[in-house]
Every structure is written in structure tokens, then in C-alpha cells.
Length: 87
Image (cartoon, rainbow, N blue to C red; front, side):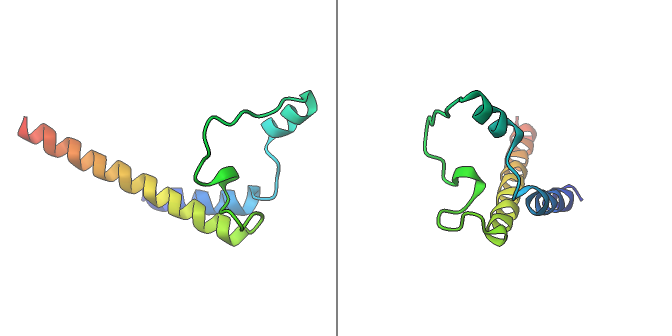
């Protein structure tokens, strides 16, 4: 049930917010603040390189990322449970 809710929220978030500028970015621009990049992210600005502004690509990226995070959390939970049973 949780994964369905998370995917649904990712879809709604992408469709609702993909065209809007983040409030923090807007305030930073008003104050003249420049961003500092500490590392080059795999998906800058939550978009696929070459597909900026493409809602479908952003939707696929959002759902895929959500499933990866849930999968990693599930596997970590299984490993911790197995470790607890042994020890």
C-alpha cells in the first residue's frame, strides 16, 4: 500500500509541479544568490539530460526513482531482519 501511495504522489507531483519554479529558487534569484555545485548529479534538476521540460520523461524518472528507493529500503530491511535473526 505504501509503495502505491508513493508512486501516486510522485505522479501527481510531477504533473502538478513540473512546470513551476521552486520557491527557494525564486527567492534566491531575487536576492542575487548564485548556486554552488559540489558534485555533478546524475539527473540535474530532476530531468533526463536532453529531455528538459519533457513531462513524460520526468514522470518516468520520478516513478523509477521512487521504485529504486523503495527497493533499496526493502532490501536493507530484509538484510537487517536476517542479521537480527542470526545474532
